[in-house]
Amino acid sequence: MIAPSVPRAELSRDAFVDRALAIADTEGIAAVTVRRIAQEFGVTPMALYWHIRSKEELLDAMGDRFFAGLEPLPVGDDWVEQLRAAVAALVASLRRHPGAAHLAAPRVMYCDAGRDLAEQTLATLRAAGFSVAQAADVARHAMQTAVMLVTNEAGAEPHVAAEMRQALLDTKRSALKALSADRYPHLIEAADAMTDCEDVDGYYDFGVDMFVAGARATLGPTA
Image (cartoon, rainbow, N blue to C red; front, side, top):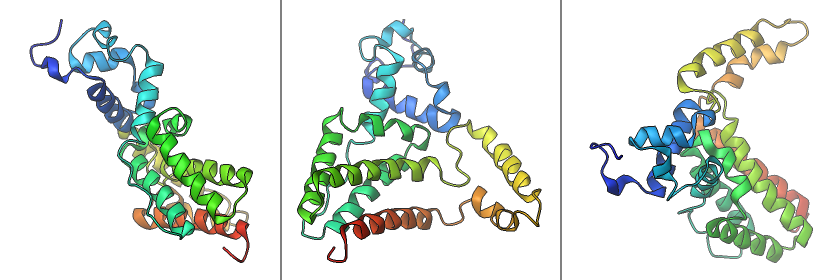
């Protein structure tokens, strides 16, 4: 029975995915279950069956969402800028829901938007002179780099519930600062930087630029 406060129009696959992503961001991915989503909408789990049949399908749909509405790659001959744009677009999408960002990579080949991005990226890399194997590796690492940047942002801790994050960060920071100054002077010096991100946009820009610079270097001096 649908709760009176929940209009029937709200019961849609997109609405369920939206709510699941919000829960993952605030409580961690472990909190996302079909039963929990049903409770959020005031319905029984069976009411979700017409839209999402299992937790696995829900998680897949969450992963697919990251590829929807991605900015198109720039048109032109500058493959470096095209690669940078592809990774930056992925990062921007993943940052909207960091608690579920790790779900994106396994879905890139299972949704049209993900396949389109992969096809465009591979075409760009092949035209730049990468071999088939090299292009596949760069494209794969681009996806993995985007996920890594988001899931490992210092101070974010998207894998744990929001109310637990500060305590976890305090524990990590204290543990680093309590190390032997003779043996680990640089870890102690970096304790704050490793547990907090003062310039978030700068962190992402640096990460994307570092990846692109590495890809460019592998192609040789003519890139």
